[in-house]
Length: 221
Ligand SMILES: [Zn+2]
Image (cartoon, rainbow, N blue to C red; front, side):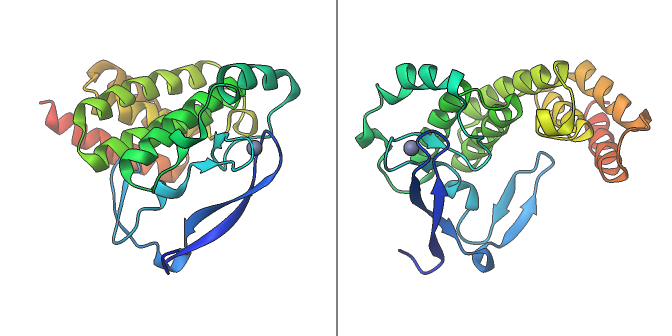
């Protein structure tokens, strides 16, 4: 294993057995620039390439954000994923192309195993960033649309931060930013408007919303 990596022990949310997965040592994680939507460039290896985990026992692809798979979701996962997956297709290095493949499996297993919609949306956002990393603009845009749909679904069913998985103001900013990136002017304007006028929004999110809205408006006048 390369000297900047270590083996992390992780527990599978389905079979509950332990596997090891490579992760980057924190002192080797050197963020450079953060884009509006959170996409970060790194000097050196990219930690997003190490997030999807493959269980070496049952071959589930999962993410640290997954909750333990509940009894009533096990069958769907077994029928539609575990009994069909060929372990060879999950083998590979941590190249962006292979990791994109793993993130897509993670989206599937998250949906089948009843993970929070915010987790599915987060994985979609990772795919947007992975396609940006590889310069595949068409697929980046496609995943932006899917992820925006997912975040809209999360927003419509929002209850609270714990059950939904993220704070409401952060969610609104995600929707506003994705709408702006997809040039959905009216949608972006509406969400930035709410973010700038609502009392429920934290100072940090409001500051970001203001600057993103200013940039977006300038581009559209
Ligand atoms: Zn497992």
